Amino acid sequence: MKMKTLFLMLSLNLLSHSSFGQDLDLNSMVLPVPQENKFVDPGYYVWCGSVTKADDGKYYMMYSRWPLADGFESWPVTSEVAVAFSDQPGGPFKHVKVALKARGTSFWDGSATHNPAVVKHQGKYYLYYMGTSCDLPIKKHESYTDTWWRYRNTQRIGVAVADHPAGEWKRLDQPVLSVSMDSTAPDALMVSNPAATFDDQGRVVLLYKQVGKTDKINGGAVRFGVAFSDSPFGPFQKHDKPIFEVNDGGKDWMVAEDPFVWFQKGQYLAIVRDVIGKFTGDEGAWALMVSQNGTDWQQAKHPKVIGSTFYWEGGIPSASKLERPWLLLENGVPIFLYGATRADKAQTLSFNVAVPLKLQN
Image (tube, rainbow, N blue to C red; front, top):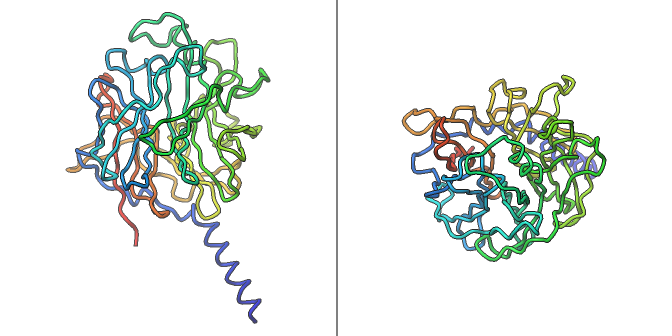
């Protein structure tokens, strides 16, 4: 009888874990955003926004910034990763320092650093990010020229480590994830947009953007891959096929972008930008994806996380969609979403937004 009871309890526990991602309905938790829940860094575009709670009880945002004077599309040329802090998860956040300063094109990340994703593990903070390195002359506001694409194509993924988010970040002289040597691989041209988590085996699960080579300078379709490592510093073993695919022959240029990934109750979960509405029916919305092994992903039962339009308090619609998803969990409970958005169609300003979530009973 005792063995049967134990078996039943284990079965129910496994069942509840396997349905966790399918039962999660983040969209039902989304609240209107207070106007003060925006982080603006004067004189800079703000993008990304990776938030963690440190042992001092404060909230730290690792974010990308680059001068407004350079133009919105100059991120592969002049972006840098900085850190801001707040006493509350919704802000106000205040700039503290530049975390990853420019260090010259003799380094793989010497031109720009971008796409920060911070993960705390065993008392250390690991910052995965994208770097570029190119010394070709380029004008302010120049974009989508051959020179601009050459900067973009040097994107590689690195990691830095620190004892505290506002402390000294030690980075490596080489990327932890680079392009594949096979010229036909989906990531033969560039890799970027890292998202990382640790699973229950202690492995690092790294999701990343892939672009393959073609006869065009900007390469081919944009896809996402996944790689695994037993150490935060690699080496990473790449999975051989793109993830977040849909069964339509891969005809679309890009389906998903900007994942945030976490591991909870035996499952891998990710929030992605639903670029063309394949998962939510809403182009530009955020979608929740679930996986049992980190390589095979499907949309959750409640796929929409937040729509392509979000709302400020008072029912005021946003001027632009949110990008670069981030979810803050405390004790396994989602409490805030963060995303970057443009202030207007002219792209004269961008900032990070903290979206409050209603706590579930």
